[in-house]
Length: 297
Ligand SMILES: [Fe+2]
Ligand SMILES: [Fe+2]
Image (cartoon, rainbow, N blue to C red; front, side, top):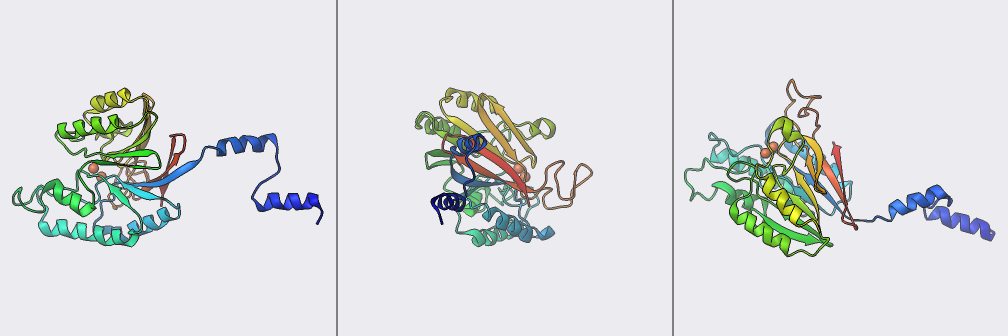
């Protein structure tokens, strides 16, 4: 093999193609490096009916093909514990299924937030070990109803939207969030996970927006030296919005139409309106930008 052929073969072996101005352009976009890959799953609403457990496992199998680092779970993990007529047995049945399914992908960390359907308010009294948020926090294996952590220079804030005037932060959480953001260095990229959208487009059609968006967006604006990427669910619809340079993504629902076939507004079987059942894959880039892609399964 002469030298020219050797060079050619090396190039092909390395997956490279011939150098041309076009390829230089491709190379420059590729210099933006992805440093974390995360799955955002939300509104799983797990239940024994509708073959939901098996359909959820199919979703997880597909998520695994994306070679993700970990999961963010946006709440409404179980179908519903919050209604007045829900029994202790029914609550346990739903969390039991969740924990069994969770054991099937235990090699991954899952950082969850609370959804409005996760809490059992109909317990006989407030001292009951299964009453309210404490039990949901325990079942989800999270350290608190709100918390934060950091990975590879990115900061993650997990909020509890389930307070007075549904879709809001309580005073204790506001103080904590202000302190948490103050502790970050300039330019830190921040992913904020909440159940209700902090700001949404689909919420104009369907409701379910945070009622204290003004307070939260003002707080983010005070921290304009950071890059905010906010993820939510609750509405079961897919949208994205940008306000004051902060990005907001409402990422549909794993369960689509709560695993059911849908209604007259469903564009297709199992969809909620125009959104199919699905999950989002987030690519976190080293320059603090994020690519959010929704996948149906
Ligand atoms: Fe939901
Ligand atoms: Fe919800």
